[in-house]
Image (cartoon, rainbow, N blue to C red; front, side):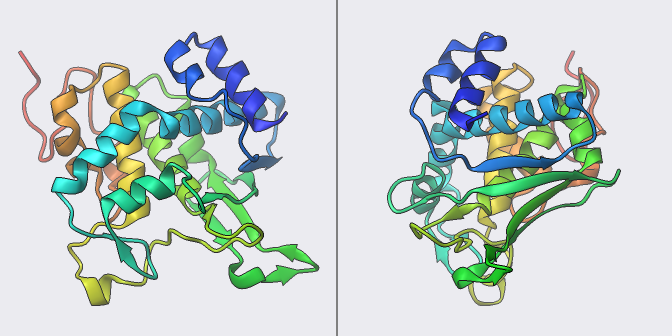
Length: 251
């Protein structure tokens, strides 16, 4: 199913009119599903991808990301650093940025997730080397009834999607990478892919009412802006504030 139709089908099914309005413009299909083990996995993976992409297109995500320009002077893209404003343009797919079509597979029963991107037209048997693999432990989080655990799955998918963005009309250039500039711009500089994932995660938590609007920064601090604090995802009950170190539940 083309991804723009998938957006409409999934978002209409959950009754999110506001998110639906964000997805009516057809886009190149960024992710195709290549390997699952059952029809239910296929359906749930489609929902995971579509919900994450719709969130990245939402006004709330864009506003949250833009608001961080006062917190971060530079963000690491891997091969270079840039401003939060530039990251907003990249994630917003402003010209020349776009998604590069990428196949995804659910793999094993572990935590690993990765996007492999062929730079400068690297090919194997004539095919560009670009693929995404996501471990089923992350997938299990998306199915969780716990909003925090589910939000961690959104973080992971948003992070991996960031690696599918290209600035070339034909090649997968890997605009956002995880490593490369920390030695030259400082270890304290956030990494764009992790910041993007945490902003998506915390925006989701705002939208479902798990955190307040003013708790964005404390939420990002919990889950990380230069790495993903994966081990914290299952540490919060429904009545616990998202703060680290953990504090007593709200009265």
